[in-house]
Amino acid sequence: MSAELPSGKSIFVVWAPDSDAPGTQELRMKVGPEHGARIGADPTNRVAGPLISPESPTAGGTKIFGSLVLFEANSLEEVRAKVEQDLYWTSGVWDKSKLTILPFIQRSGSVKVA
Image (cartoon, rainbow, N blue to C red):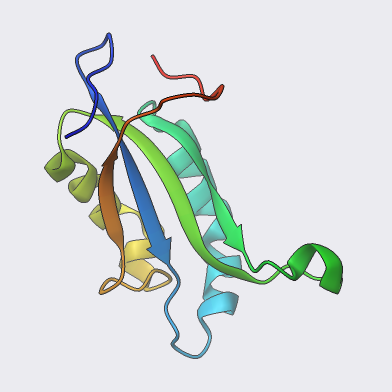
């Protein structure tokens, strides 16, 4: 159960690991700008970005292995519908069998929500 916000909605976390299929990183880079523009324009998106390997900051390169998104929505089903329309989902960047959507209760921090 998630905590209801003043808007009557809840926050949901999307953990979307990338596919292990060959060419996924190249596909991510190819469709990334359009994906970013679309998700950035979504008013229910509260936080979104790639997850990088722990050694990336010290290894001189960035290895992206998935995405994290926080949505403000009425239901898990609403978030699932958004995810399934996302370019990373439809193009095969995300591993559909491993993608997870969970309700989230923010206890502290400064992520702004409506």
